[in-house]
Amino acid sequence: MADLTAAAQASGTSIERAAQNIPATLREATGGPSGFDDALRRPALVCDIDGILTFASEAMATALNARYGTHYRAETMPHQIQNVIPDIQGVWLRSEYGRGDLYANMAPNLDAVRTVG
Image (cartoon, rainbow, N blue to C red; front, side, top):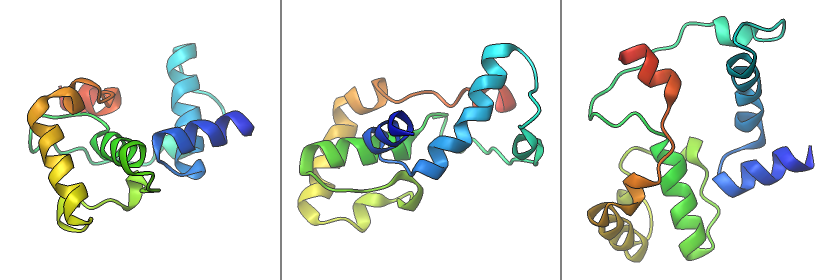
């Protein structure tokens, strides 16, 4: 549990969301379904509106938390996060978009890529 908590905190996500990723990870690692992945059988809707199939909210939360010592969580961040955070953070985040490092370090959402691709 300590490892799960640490991983969730480092990525700026909740422990619940990190735990939800465990069955999918195990299924990927073993090459097939497991007995406890009922949640994964629920329908999911994936829509690619901008050509970026990554964990963008997690990347933005992690970047802001690292830079400003904040405690943003990916699942509570709106799509236009720069409109609801303090101005100085919004300016910094927009400058990060322009550098490309933020995009280069985003983890791909492989389930979404497989679904859309």
